[in-house]
Length: 318
Image (tube, rainbow, N blue to C red; front, top):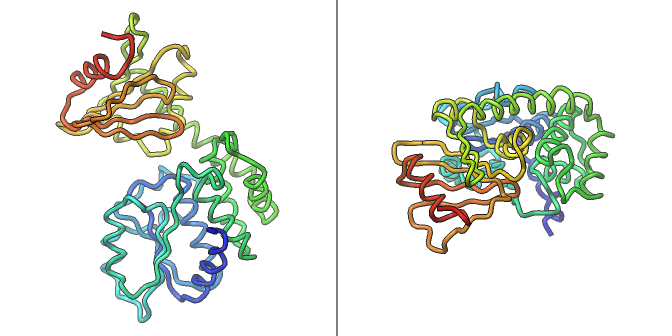
């Protein structure tokens, strides 16, 4: 059903002379690669494209994705003169970003396209995968550089195609990108490996803020807030525990605690941790994905959160 809409989406892009592509405040490499690839495709067809995000993006976070420096803040864009015709608005991965959604409401006369990836989707495993299928099903050919960026997004999001739901359909789309000029060597050597090296250094630095509970077999990691904020990006969490378990035994439970604000503590657990999450979760928010569980304690210090975890969330402890 969704695939049937792809040619109509491409037609919408073809019918516009200007477009605004929005990404969230802290986009993943997959989202940034998709936005930049779509931009190059539209510009190939003489569409004037503006890339925006609620907050400034640090190009160093995505050092091997070209054109990241073109992404403006929303405030920068709103200070530019309006176009004669309402631009087409395309948001990528912005389903939870209120700042982006509020901007979209300002363009009442514009056609809007929202492209998101559901983490529970087993057909498409990345936004880049969706964009690739968009091109394939519409018989559209993006520039070679765009194909390289889409391949980088897919490779990164699927951990070098090691995701358990990687199947023949996705591999076929990867093959299509390669046949249309995606530079596999650049993705693997210049993008994926160097990005992973940066992440691994960060993950390794976390081990400098550890304490080990020999009785409970828990490795507590409590980095300072400034260290965490300086290095954290959303996609670093996807491989966080894989990297940390290269240094410790798999029978040890790794728990990371960061004091985010004066009254908030952020906790991360590997998905394999056996947690007792009560039905009533007043005072903290729980989120789960394929690789980790996160809990945001609304009113807690690191010490208080640690005690609560031991007393209420883990089996066979205090």
